[in-house]
Image (cartoon, rainbow, N blue to C red; front, side):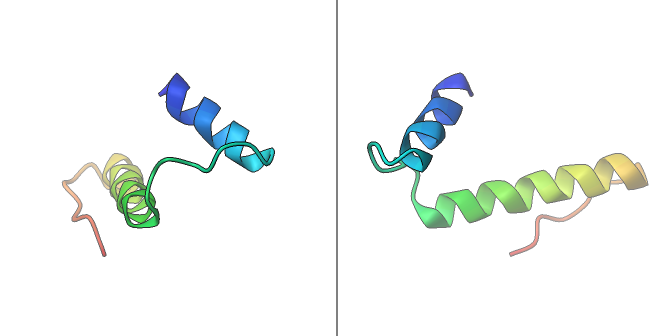
Length: 49
């Protein structure tokens, strides 16, 4: 996790490109949104997208 955040920060500051492809970033966000919905509802939630 720390390496991921450091890579993102470096890319945001104009350094090396972020090494995670856009498609994988979207999949991660979709999974995190499902986790948040599941925490709120107390039920299993589908990953959308």
